[in-house]
Length: 96
Image (cartoon, rainbow, N blue to C red; front, side):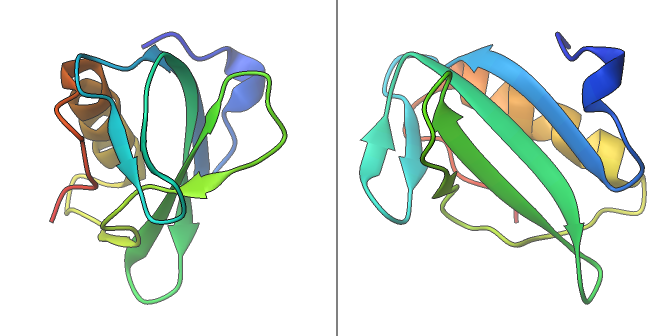
């Protein structure tokens, strides 16, 4: 991953990612492509909220499928999975 240590806090992970071909799917604007920033953070009910933005922009969008169930391995593992999915592209969505 490419996160800086300052982007890590309990309950929150952030990375910059080059979205793969076909981009990532958001609830608000559909597919976005290019370099995105993704944040995965704890949410109520054993879930995780996942948001993306064009890197450097102000607007954040909900990754389609968010909030996602928090796996037994924890938030860090889910964030790593999300980063991998975004790098693959293909209209990437939150894991189920």
